[in-house]
Length: 336
Image (cartoon, rainbow, N blue to C red; front, side, top):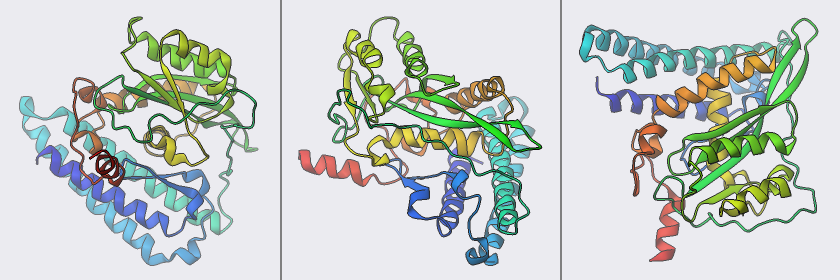
């Protein structure tokens, strides 16, 4: 089986599951982005009204995932039989999809149990963006920009991770993941997990990204983020200015203005780490190290011509997408 066949099937599967999920989510639970995909905060869907959702839709999920699991298993068996000629990336991705399907099915089960009052899962969320401050703000420099090379635009964001301190009592706390992603390649180039929302953890992620440049920032590099106090802080913006990096920020609270960063958050939390439970910040860090390595080096992207972020980092120019970007079409039409 060719790579693109499995990856296209994967796209169809996840599109179907996401479409089904959206029938039970409010508009606040899902965020569309310019990746042509949907980001779902599954922590908000743990108490979905499944009795209204309909058992027939659950059946669709079950039958679809069973069929897709079989496709993945057949792919693994076929590639493995080729011995030295086996496509290891394809095999690893098929294994990853099987694991993701299992996690999704568990999510469906947990959601149904929650409706029946049988679920002990705590619905816990944290606010990570505080834009109510008097620090200087900056215009959005990327809203009409289509990056054509690595290190042209970096996007940053912070998301939360739940740590269960006591499984019996349900006591929990949060830790916070700061990410820096290359807009063009979708590669995570800087990350840090912190106990608080202090700017120093976002700065540590930024310094990791800067370290990859060897002290020579790319010409015209733009750093884009939301208007949160961490990114607007003088400690953070001073580092950007010292490295001749232009500062760009969202102009409103719409997540679509930082869509790539939001999408990466969704992939890490709702795909690669979905179904995992952590009892310490060290466990979170260990799991994230593995997840980010897989994301950068093994996970193909529809928006990167089915390349991984690491492969895209070797490219320049426009990368073909497996979907239609109305945003980019509008930008081109305006520039024509």
